Length: 162
Image (cartoon, rainbow, N blue to C red; front, side):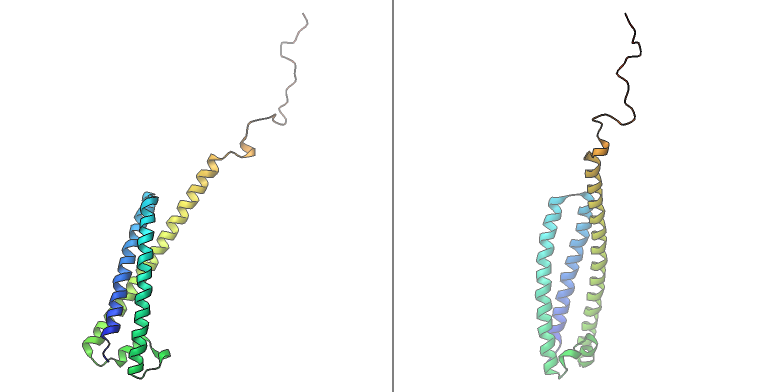
């Protein structure tokens, strides 16, 4: 059995993760702009891509399990290194290695981009909270009532007998 199916599923995962990275970069710009409507649209698109990613990963796992069974490799030893060693066709081996490396690179970039988004959203939330705190009066800031220590006498400065 050739490893073409595994390679195709790896390449599909790369494509999906590249799309996720593009959405993540769009989310960064949208958070900077402050557009909630556009952010919601991006989140819907992201959810769809995540579902596709899960489906592609499940398909990849099945294909790897079948390949390992045919090539008599234990399922627990089904690492990319062991699979690459078991692939006989040199072109397939190179293509699989490139797909695995590319997938790792894209996932790393996606993780970094999502960490940036998390920081930006956290800062936005802090700004909103600060703005709300400044706009909401507190008991200390209220100017109603009598101030302690400044009680003046009820007599006028020009109190005189007529």
